[in-house]
Image (cartoon, rainbow, N blue to C red; front, side):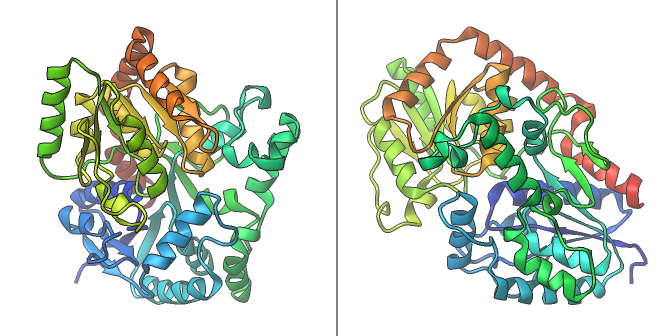
Length: 431
């Protein structure tokens, strides 16, 4: 039996980007043979919305905890995340079961630390057990909050309905207060923590900062002056699904070349809204551009979009290795998730983007806009012609192409390999 300490990666396996981030670091850490490595999650591999297969693909040991994630819970989490529903991301009854399950699991191992992103219950469990927890997320929240309010674009949640009537300076202060001081989203977590006589969370930022924060960015892209204590840049963590380039992509390339049209990559991530995805695909119909879109499974999730038939110039497929396909495209329309944004930058593909409702996505996009190679749109105000015009403008913008290529070079520096840098820092801190 191994005498090594264990590092636990707690991932939300119904989210593609998070699953990729966690497994990339876990794979690299496993190579070092300093720790035993486990990947804990709640989503059975056979669920259609699950990305747990990636754990096995990376030859990692997965631990499936209970209660399992259901389709209803996954949809609830995404709806709250997008601002479409109010309340806690994980309902109180499920949070209680999860924390009990996690405590039993963690106590059965000699755990050095836990690594997670959005697996919220583990933040509570680690606080209860005094186990260090490392949060691996975009540093765009901290970047946005550190800036002059005059320079900031307010996220959609603060720019809709009556909120858009509030002066920007006050709106920024409200957003700041919400992130740091609103404890409503941690109510059930804090109740459990208090039962164990531990310090409750003060707000969302207190939760997601963990004990140690790994910003999966490079400082040139997300520059933060005077970062908080225990804040470390790891470099970008690029999602790399295994597999070959699908036939649909080859067909799209050939079609675009024959027509002399731009080749567009369109994806809204695993948190995307099927109806919005369908609306965008319809927008591309009969336009002078060929479109590759790995949104087939997302459309199948909703009965209103299931069975959608794309037009001749739109090539619809399942999830694909975006890091191999993006470089083939001229421009992209994406949702602003960190993995999707960095894949576009690495590929040298200027992009238009619209967040799914999560402010972090908008902050990721805003950073790209500031660097001159992206355009951002508001989800409830954008018109089809806005997207189309934006894509054509970027296709013809040599400055945007030059700037994204420059950032791509910075991303690819060997010393900023995300998974290696993160794994080395874990070893340095806990080895």
